[in-house]
Amino acid sequence: MAKTRKVIITCAVTGAIHTPSMNPNLPVTADEITEAALGAAEAGASIIHLHARNEKTGKPDQSVEAFMRFLPRIKQNTEAVVNITSGGAPGMSIEERLQPALKCKPEVASLNMGSMNFGLYPMMDRFKNFEHDWEQQHLENSRDMVFKNTFADIEYILTSCSDNGTRFEFECYDISHLYNLAHFLDRKLVRPPLFVQSVFGILGGIGPHPEDLMHMKRTADRLFGSDYQWSILGAGRNQIPLAAMGASMGANVRVGMEDSLWCGPGKLAGSNAEQVNKMRQVLEGMSLEIATPDEARDLLQLKGGDQVAF
Image: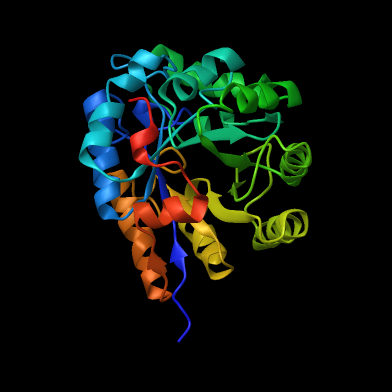
C-alpha cells in the first residue's frame, strides 16, 4: 500500500503587514506571541514563523532583544520548528532585518527572493479606525514604496548565515523570484532540498488565480525538479482555497494571522490555532496526513532544535 503523503503546516503568527487595530486578536506582546505560537503548534503546525512587535504600539520590531522575549519560551514548550523572519518590514535596512536570524541561528529563516512593489494601501478601504498614528501611514506608504531585496541583499543574507546551519524558507512572490532562486542554486549558495514558499495575492506580486498557482508549480518543477519542497501561501481570503488547491497538487501549506486576519467570509480569526485547525480539517478531509515537527525536519533536512542559539 502506498504511503500517505505528509503535509507540513507552517503558521505565521503575527507578521509585519497587518496592524493591531485591524484585528484585536493579532498577537503583539511577547506573551501573546508565545501563546499564539504554542497554540498553533498544538493545533498541528510543525513550523512556526515568527516576527516581533513593539509591545506598546504594535509596530514591527526587528531587534534581537524583542525576539528573545519569546524565542526561549517557545523552544522550551514545543517541538515545533522555529522559523525567524529576515524580511522584517519594508523600509528596514537589510542589516537590521537580518540580525535576529543571524544571532539566534534558527533551524529556518525566511528569505524574500526579489524586490517588488508591496501594495498594502487598498486595505484602507476596509479598515477605517486606527488606534496608533503609525498604522494608517504604514498602509499609505506602500503606495510609493519598493520592498528592496536585491541580488546583493540576498547574497548578504545567505553568506552571513552560511556557518549557522540555518536553512531558508524562500518566499517567492512572482515567477522571477523562482529564477532568482535558480541563480543562487547554480552558484551553489543554496542547496537542496529547497523550501519554496509560493506567495499569491499580494498587490505587486503574482495573483491568486488557480492558473497562477499552476504556472508557479510548472516553473518550479522545470527549474528544480525533485530538489524542492513546495508550500502555498494565499494572502487574505485566498488562504484556505489556494492552500487546498496546492495540497491537491503536492504542496505543503502556510496559514496564520501574518497572512490573513480572517477565518471565513466576514469572520475575523480568533486565533492562529483556529486557522491551523481549519486548514487541518481540509487536509485530513483530503486523506492527507499532517507532518509532525520531526517529519518536517526530515523532509527539509534541518539541523535540529538543539542547534539553535536561543
